[in-house]
Every structure is written in C-alpha cells, then in structure tokens.
Image 1: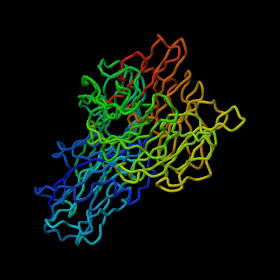
Image 2: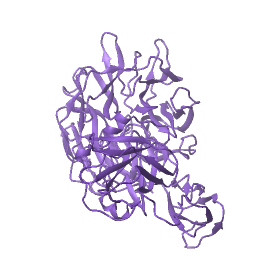
Image 3: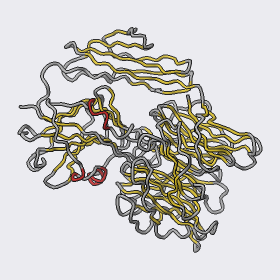
Image 4: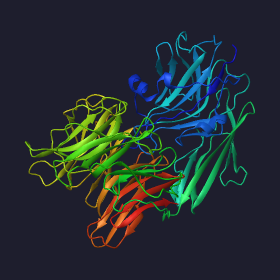
Length: 639
C-alpha cells in the first residue's frame, strides 16, 4: 500500500476543576468528548504535505500553544490533570489523503501503556467527530470504519488523540498506511518516583516499562551522574535507588539497544531544592488580596483577585517565571465588592465564579457571577453573567467543568428553615452564558466554608461538606454525589466520611491514582482520607498529614506527579505562616515528617493570617503566591 502524506497540527484544550487527578479510572461519554474538541468547520487545514507514512512532530514544536503539551525529542507529550483535575488534553493531526484507498486503520504508538485514551476521527459527512475508546497497549491498530464520506473534499482528514483527566500519554507515532519496513527502534522509558524534592531525599528508578515492538531489548545502560559514562550495563531492565544530598539538577540517562541493533535514549532530570525563597518579584496589587491563580495562562501566571476598587481584577506576569509584572492590575468587574472566588479552565481559557457584595455589607445583597476570559492568557474578559436565584447567597464554594459546561457550588441561607444549604448550578451552554435554576445538594445544613470542594469523580459531580448535627458539639465530614453526570439531581444516601470533628474542618478534594481523596483541617491537624474504590463508596481510615496551628485555606496541588497541600496557619499574637507539604508518592499515602514554611511573619498577628496561599509550578519549580494584611502580594519559589 502506498504511504499516506500528511501534516501534523498540535492543539491543546484543558478545563480545570478543583482537584488534582492523576489516576486512571475516568470515563468520558461521546457527548462530553464532542464538546471538548473544536467544531470541524472551525479548523483550518494546511494544504502543505510531507512525504512518508508517519510523523512524530519535532519539526512542528514552534506552533504548540501551551506548555501543557511539549515536544521531547521526537515525541508529543500530553498531560491532563496538570495543576488541578477535570482536564481533557488532546492533539489534533491533520492528514492530507487525496488518493487514499487503503484499509481504514490507524496505527497509534505511545511510549507506555496508558488508560483513559480516546481517538476522534473527523466525519465531514456528518460534520461531527467520531470517537473510539482506545485500549491501553502502547502499540495498537484502531479501525475507524468505512472512510467514505469522512474525508473533506480536498482529502483532508483529522485525527484527535485525547486523554482523560487522570492520564498522561507520550505519542511516539501516529500513522495511516503501511508502517516503514525494517527494524523498528525500541522505546526507552525510565520512571522515577521523585522528580523533585527538598534535599536530602531518595530517588527510586525503574526501566522495566521500556519495550521493543518487533523484537527484544538486549542491552540496558544507565548513566546516573551525567558524566557520559554508562556505569550500569546489563541485559535486564535496571531498577534501584540513589540518594540526593544537595540541591541542584541531576540528569539520569537510559540507553537501550534491541536485537536488531537499533538504540533509543531517554533522560529524566531530578531536581533537588533547598527551601522556599522570596522571588523578589514586585507584584503591584492592593494589600490583603483575596485571589486565585492560574499558573499557566498561555505560558505565564495569572492572578484573579480583589482590585484596588475592591471589585474583581486580574494581573498577569509578563514572563513565564513570574519575575516581571505590569505596573498594576486591570479591572474585570467593578460593580460591587468582591467577597470570594474560584478559577478554572474552560475550553483553554480562564473562567471565574465569584460572589459580589453590591450593597457594602448587606447580607441580602450578594450576587453570584460568572465570567469567561476571551483568550487563553486571561488578558481580555467577557461580560459577567449574574446567576439566578442567589439572593441570600453566603459564598461561592466551588467551580468545576461538568460534562463540558461550567458548574458552580454555593452556600445560601434559607430564612424559612434558618439553615444554610449547598446549592449546585450547571450552565445550560458550554460557555456559561445562560444558567437555569439551582439544585439543592443536601437537605442538611452546612457550616461556613469557602474551600474548593466540587469535583467530578466516577463520572458524576461530588461535593464534600461539613455538617453539625442538631444538639451535637461535633462536626461530620460528608460526601454528596450526583445521580447523573450533569448534576441535575443528587443521591439521598450521603456518605459520612468522618465524625467527631472540630467545628471548622473545611475540606478540599482531589483524585489520586484513581481514588477520591479528601483533605481537611481539624483544629491542630491536617488530615487526608482516601476512598478504597473508584466510586467513592468505601473509605480508608483518616491519616494525619501534618500538625499545625489554627488553619485556613487548605488546597490540593499537583507537584511533579505527587499531591501537595498548602494552607494558612495562625498562632495569635505569635506567628502567621503559609505552609506547604508534598507527598512522597502519587497516591498521597506517604508524607514527610513535617511541612515546610513558605513564608511567615511575627508582627501584627493578633488575628490576621494569610488571606491567600496559592501553590503550583513555575519554571519547573514549586511556587506559591501569598497575601496578608499590610503586606504586598509575594511570590516564593522552592529551590
């Protein structure tokens, strides 16, 4: 069969929710996948062609729109989940096949087995994408049915490779047609459990995921000290550990050779930091900022926060490392006084749900609003939309992308019951322009909490909340689950995760290795509790993560494939601290002995803790933005 000719176009779209997702138990429906990809008519195909039956994309790296997708050697790397969960990542390949008459089959090759992988084929006859859920094998042939009518008039044909919110994929090869003849090179894969840590720490490595599709690997070689000499040379996959004692970057190289003489090389860089340091960046915002951060708004950090007029404003760095910032913030919504907010990603653009006080403190004059940026950088914004039936709202407590549409969770007081309930509202369209009536999540009243605790898990929205039973001095940690993927109704059988808690236990949720995890504060401790199944029906015992003073603003983050937690703690009249701790594994079952201090103050700490502690990754290093009364907004880097 004659090789096909095609051109590669890479695009990325991500939508962000409130939890970290790094497992492999996620299922998407064709309808939700259809909403994630741009319409076929909106994609402009190039008329250029390249020869050959395969492309691996190195020559197209200049048009990658986001650091969430990367070209490493000859491989396209996709990561969904990223800083936080709920994301879909994809690449779109544009084929030019005017004379294609071969078998309707796609050959997909990834560097390792991956779950949550889907393939979309353009069907120009119907004007829609046609989806197939791929297997988990590194190399697989995927039929896409009779191609008649699926190609555009000029022979154009699009193939999208998607990964769900809890997966990573490295696409080594994508081809329609006959694979090239001759010995195929092997795939070198070197996995490490700690790509980043505070020195000293141990790194465990394993090369057993390496493979050769048409033969066997006969030689494995390791260079552990980057001196150009391979200290380890053997015929079986090496696995072992070594100690990192001082800060710095440590490249580890694996070279493999197959029985046909072909070789492959991969390098993993382990970074060791020494502690949190003030970046020295000058960020011109008002003091005591209430805000949220998108650490990758088209390649640079974006802060959405309280403005100088007390409304909603944004400030975006002028570079990817956060070293340079504009002279001041730019207003998004000046019609009211910002109370609190949450940020997410919708179709690759930042979006914000926020509560505004429109009458300077009146409890019945709060509005819940939603606004979507007009670009990926978040430097231009649309018109804010006010959600209906939120007159007695107390605060917005969650924002997520649910089945392709934005959804918010908010707390509202009901006079007739003298109780505060949680309500859920999902937009009627994918851009959040129209909203219907909210749905009550639970018949139980909830304690005041402003944590991000709305997350899609097991295919349905889930909410963690605190409830104090009538007549009891203690508080329960509960989980409510929707009865359908859109959250139109909620199950009555709520799960009681933990009892006998202190009155203030605001939770945060994440998906870790395919299990739901809830972190919460209970007076002087930070806890984590994990489900034991993929539906959050059964739970393990709680685990103490860290001891702390009275704390607020607990949040999950992704840190080089491991979950991390940040929070604000306060010892009145003594010290206010912003704290951070990173798990020693991807499941969040093992943690260091103590948390690190991002920044702290010992002056004017009678009652003012940090109003904002937002952690993520900048320039390949953990980073955190912190704000406190009378102090400027501060960026700290762990290095």
